[in-house]
Image 1 (cartoon, rainbow, N blue to C red):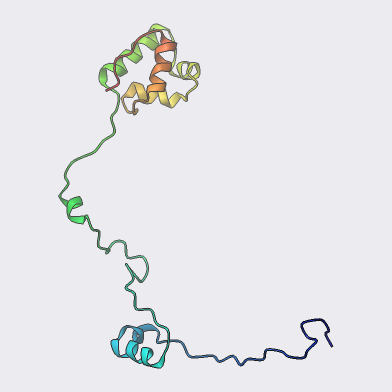
Image 2 (cartoon, rainbow, N blue to C red; image 1 turned 90 degrees about the horizontal axis):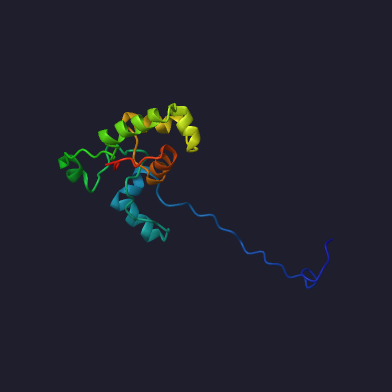
Length: 144
């Protein structure tokens, strides 16, 4: 028999636990008559409207700015280096008799970075352009 201060007086809390049936589920929970019946029975119910319930319906969801998105015909592109910049970079690199890989190593960048700048696909980065200016000893034109 357990002993201790909690059990010394012999009074224990033996309150009955009553299990109640939960509110309506599924289709029944959506009808007003079932919700009202649950309210009368004293069950706890939640009648909040959920946004986009029932899984992944993103393709059919209502987007607040959908009309603006459909009407927008602008094409947005990142600014890339100008034609003058890429030609000046190639000429400066060839004047120093460097390969793209050697120039990339000299400025501590990957070879693909130099390739992107020379093909005109790179997004201008001021830090990289400054490294190129110092390494090649020239002042390259504005990227864009």
